[in-house]
Each structure stands twice: as C-alpha cells, then as structure tokens.
Image (cartoon, rainbow, N blue to C red; front, side, top):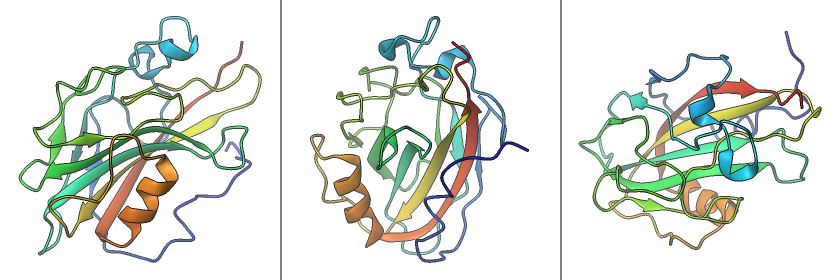
Amino acid sequence: MTQFRVPDPYAALPDLPALEVTSESFTEGATLSAAQLGGKMGVEGGQDKSPQVSWSAGPEGTKTYVVTVFDPDAPTASGFWHWSVANIPADVTSLPEGACTGDDTSGLPEGAVVVRNDAGFKGFVGAAPPAGHGPHRYIFTVFAVDVESLDVTADNSGAVFGFNLHFHTLAKASITATYENWG
C-alpha cells in the first residue's frame, strides 16, 4: 500500500451522514485516465475533462449539492484545488463525464457556480503532479447542502469556498483516485 505524506484532509472535519458516491470514469483507488489529466498544466495527452460522478440523494433538507476535487499531496502547505462546483440543484444526482472540460462549463446544470481552481481558471483542471514527486490522491467529494445558493462567487479561492460550505453541509462522501507522474 502506498503511503501518502498528508493525512485525509476531511478527517479533521465533523462527522456527517454519508452519501454514496460512484464514478463510471474510475473506481476507488484507481489511477486516473488521460481524460482526467492536466493538459493545461503540461501533462502530455491530458484532456482536463471532469469525470462522470453520481451520488445518492441527500437527507431531508438538501437544497443543492457541491462537488469538489482536491489534491492534498501537492507540494504546497494548502494542497491543490482542481475543481469546485456549487449550487447544483437538489434534483440532480449525477454529472456526466466532460460536464466541465477545462474552462468550458456548458455541461453543468443551470445555476451551477464554478469557482476558480488553483491553476487560476474557472473550470476543471486534471491531475498534474510534479514529475518524480510520488503518487497523489484526487479526492472527489460530493456535499449535500442546506441552502439553494451557497454564498460563493466564481472568483473565490478553494479555501473561501470550503469555509462557506462547512456551515451548510448536511452530508458528504468521497471517492478517491490517484495519479503519479513518472516524468
């Protein structure tokens, strides 16, 4: 089993009821395919295509969902946010592969807000760890939220997004993929 340098970043947050999260694009612990690699960040063949993600319905009081992708193993003190989408309507429990490809967000439900990722644009940026840095985890998390519109804008950072999300989360679950750039 691979040892990661950073513990699960969600372990320090309060326990919440769990959703069930699955993906047709990858399975738990699997390596991401070229579709989900960071072409915009120089990974050859990377397509920056968001994966297919499905989740079970949230508990009573769920008004919207949030989907995020976070790499806690990035060589920073704050990890790396690859994708953050808020205000997904409560009747939506799945996003197709490519709902967001790079900065094209046209495949997302109406009203969804995509926040700037740590690559500097509003969209999905695929996995792109530094060559030789070891394996990185990509934690795809779905949150059931108790408000129809999370108080975030497309220009918020991942940290501000997470801070606002923390106070409105009813349930959550994650599915994790990995990728290592052998360079």
